[in-house]
Image (cartoon, rainbow, N blue to C red; front, side, top):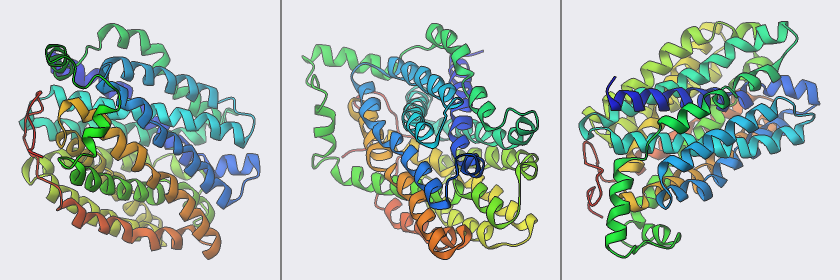
Length: 409
């Protein structure tokens, strides 16, 4: 196996479980709502507040520009596995939420750095396709819990068993410590910094450069795009289980066969996202996926027949491939000395506020309309606001990511 293939496999396994664990909070909403006596609005706040951890991730992920991608990735992997295991023993909704705030913080640090490591290590002409297939591993992991909730419930283990399974990376952690190397781009940048007297010696320097006139406009644009993508995910993808349980009379048994659709659609959607961004560019691929996201949301949440609901949901899972596009684009827009900081600022510190606000807004509107379906359908227009933003950004298809290269500011 080539070094590139070995790196891909190593990161893909860890990220499979990140996708698995990220899905759990949304999946178990109706179950924990019944166990802990929570209303629809309260459950929306749980999902939204737990996503605050993804905002806090900025304060961790930017350290990768100073100490390296490897140590921060490994720390995040260990923390999210430990906290996922702890969540299995949460005695009430408050403890559940607090544990998930920090677990989800570590999850997105791990995922963001996994994409960044691949982006820096893979050849420019195939970077999009590699990241697209890699994103499919996230979708694959997120699809598996649906099939497990019912059998775990039947065996008397219930939703807590899902969080125990999600802690599997704890077993694999020693292997990651022994086999994951630092990226060549960071090593080269470290040498350059030492030779130049470390002009970026302070932790605030990358952030200062990001908001300078050279990079400010692209930072704000990509951040706006992240807010929109996260808001859509927090409404359309995170509300599905609550919607079908409360308004379509589904139960855990109806979810068992869901992966038969979500797995192939998820893998195809992410893989096609990689193909599209390498062939037609980041701008066009993003626009295509955002327009599709708006349409699929309406189909899923306004359909009455099970087949149409499933078709809409499968499409939503596949269109989650927009994450791979915007993640790759973010890495390409900035030089290596500020790349992790830019990703943390755009996707986490500000962008993930969309994931916080989305479920909260959907929960409030759901209470007001007495319908999650109508609330999410109203919010389906949000992805369309991202299309003009995408065309404000420079096209970065096939650029090199070695130190000193990238799109001109």
